[in-house]
Amino acid sequence: MVIVKGVIPVRDTLRDSAVALAQELATQARAEHGCVSYEVYVKADTPRVIMLWQQWQTLDDLERHFDSCLLYTSPSPR
Image 1 (cartoon, one colour):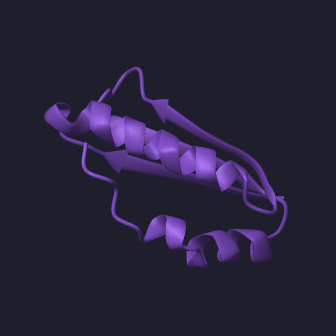
Image 2: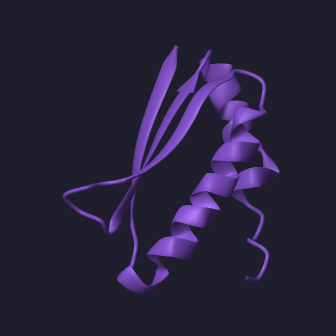
């Protein structure tokens, strides 16, 4: 099991769109082979910080995720 925790600081004015984008990424990542869990949180004590919590079955699965186009595609304009 591989666990990844990431934090992303965002501007107040962009928080809602950043959370929506992170949730979209999480939804797509959950369908990837080896993804056990992919969660998006806004820190209660620091609402300018989005936290990503991921669990992958193997390091190979995580590396495939990092190599996937999900991380490199531009979000659609909103």
